[in-house]
Amino acid sequence: MIEVKNVTKKYGKFVALDNISFKIEEGEIIGLLGPNGAGKSTTMNILTGYIDQTSGEVYVSGYDIQKKAKKAKKEIGYMPEGVPLYTDLTVKEFVTYMAELKKVNRKERKEKIQKIIKEIGLLDVQNKLIRNLSRGYKQRVSMAGALIGDPKILILDEPTVGLDPKQIAEVRDLIRKLGKKHTVILSSHILSEVSQICNKVIIINKGKIVAIDTPENLEKKVEGSNSIQVTVEDKEDKINKVKSKIKGLKEIKFVKENEDKTKEYIFEAEKDVDLRKKIFEQLSKQGITIFEMKKIDTTLEDAFMKLIKGGKK
Amino acid sequence: MWAIMKKELKSYFLSPIGYVVMGIFLLCFSLFFYLTVFQSGSVDLGILYYHVIVYGLIIIVPLLTMRMFAEERKNGTEQLLLTSPVSIFKIVMGKLLAALAVILITLIVSLGYFVIVSFFAQPNIKIVLGSIFGFVLASIAALSVGMCASSLTENQIIAGIITVAFLIMELFISGINDIFSKISIIDAYVNFAQGLISLKSIIQLLGFSAMFISITIIILQRRKLVK
Image 1 (cartoon, helix red, strand yellow):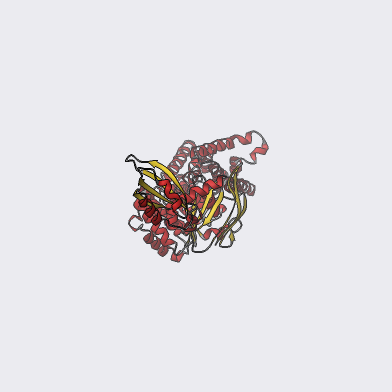
Image 2: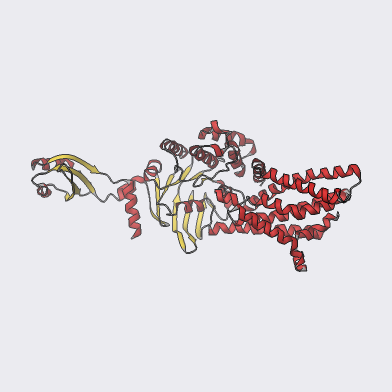
């Protein structure tokens, strides 16, 4: 569907994208993830043909985005960052204009415009000037503009930025729904968002691809530590006696002492063993009271931080 | 191309710009109608159009062109335009034609002066039609310059000022040297004011326009690479 081959983008001496390559298959929902300034928008701008890469090739549905620009662009619906819109038009006028630009068949045009306005939930405001709409609605108008013309690929640059939590949930649902019919590429610097919606994540940092994988795999990949956090009351300091008695336990790390004289430790275990039961048994044998015990899960957040730090080395 | 032209034309009249341009334009016509035709009792409407070309275009053209690309760039809407399956040439032509359409509408209204004069005398229709034809060509040339300026910057004011400066320079440029008269819009227009349709002038004006349209396209294309 989309193939990016050794793409480099330079602004003067600054390298915004450094020899990146990836493939996106039909029907995938891809999350482009990275800190601000990592090259997410640059990647999207190149995919949509808005800017040209310095070197390398980009194919959209088999068409070279530079040489067969018209055909390639027809495959794509793009919602740029910051939702730029013609604010002096009404919603319907805007969608109509986008339909005309995308050369939607004249006969079907009216019908398709109405269908999309309905689908996106703009029916109530279709005759309002875009300038008078709230941010959430503007986002939807931009989405409608991207969707018109039935593009196979949807590219959404930071689709949930600037929305309130309810609107964010709505937009996410919408993207999930759209993902059934389209290949979706969205960028975000919010990790939870990506892990919720996407079935594949591309992590970019400083113009380089750090990882491409499913959110689950990424979490697993960096799950170096299998740790359990325990808060105990241990008046006689007997906790270190436990260490030799639990098989599979690598280390007990002291974290801090709380105000109520309880102490917090992290028990690091070997991979794939759950020590919670044994820890409970051993600690109570030593007369140590457990106040709290929980398994520490690695989140995509950790994965992200770890990968990005790794990229720096 | 037509979609862009239609939308741009609509935008001119959604904002006050379209009306302001037509108002100033017609004010120019009335002023010079009084000064050249009415006061001197002449029936030569060619002089009227000549004066509007010389003094009117300097104000009107920047008003029409300064926002063309500068505004799109500033608002980011150029992303929508440049990622749609429309070639840059068509985008440029669509915008140019929309601006030209505003001028054309005014020119049609300006035929009213011909009607007024023909109540009292017999003005030469050939001169009027020749003038209007030349006016259109000269407008395309001036609009191309303005459009080119608009593609250079995201600041509308700067685009406008560059255009005004260039058009003022155009007025006097033929005085410097004969070579410069070849790129003088006014010099090329003079024939039309006498009702003569000269192929040389047509080529001169269209060539001038083509040059600036090409420069605009090159600027837009080039920006894709450095942006």
